[in-house]
Length: 528
Image (tube, rainbow, N blue to C red; front, top):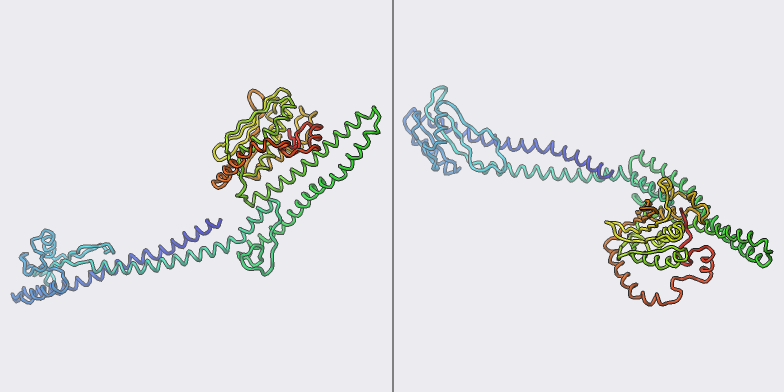
């Protein structure tokens, strides 16, 4: 809006200045041309009078002497003829026999005066021809032709135009400064309003007004602008604070509730585990069901916390860019394949990977790994025994794309539209463990980085899920390349270390119960 308002004001200023300057320039040229015509007409009248006097007394010496002095003084040639067109005086190299001069003499002898009509310009060069008859009334006694030089007059016009244009430039500069100041004054409340809208959309706390703060400072009450716009911005900030406070309370309630329930959940699990030694054989089934529900509740709490964190992070990234976030998507993809391959093998699923790196992506390793874990977890869990899951990473134009394709039963078209809905699960998967939050978390993580999650049917059957992330900028690409080379050099050492991946015994034990890999490898986020 600032650009548009400033453009309109500048356009109005330019038109106003042009409407004043152009007529002034034309008037200046016309005025100087008129001065030249009047001056040369006066000289012609003087020589016409001398010619009329010479025709009466037959003495042309005075006329000839005056014509020569005029040409020597001003450098402009003259031709004076009698009534028969015979030259009486010729100076400056101009001759009566010249075709152009002869035409002017014929017109003057017919009692017709000739003067230039077009106005001079700064670029005018050469000369202009003047002619007038000698005599009184209808009695013509001769003709006078003058060739006037216009260089001096054109130079005067150029100097006047330069002065006018310099003044016009100063006025235009002043209009530009005033337009910028007026635009800044008008738009400043709107910029605050736009910033408040972005913060409200991101769920961030709005700015607090500081009475008496320096003008232009964020949160200062003395920010300029029209009173109506200032009042609108102030009112919106009050509303934003109220809405943000409500959203923050809701977010804190979800996060605190999920966090606080961990302690009683852990205590409940310890008590349930302590009861195992006191169970009768008839209670084994009930005990197993309680453990299953406890696992499910723990997974639900973890997923709710992960979704709340993903939504909060996505909101922050909508108003605060993170240009330093970059990773090699191909490296992350191959790393997740190594960690998920044993899980897929235990689930009787064949997992293959195809990633030709480096593929720079504008996100962090952890974010892309979490999204990939969600997609692989869903594919392995729901594809079924004997299925083939393909993991692929490639650069597609300005994007880095991680694709997970399975040849399982897939989803119907109406189910694909609802797949990212929170807590939604297909009716055909009611017997499978999960919370229905995995794809919702992945979608929020990708949206925060300007990416998207795409779900399409695979042919002839199955589901194809694509995580599309913007590619990293040039600086990020160099960093990714260096980091990839460093990690490749250490790959043999890391692979040789036992327990690489960070899995603890407790995590592996819990993984064996739930059928999902432990540690930083796969997470338990499910969606379908």
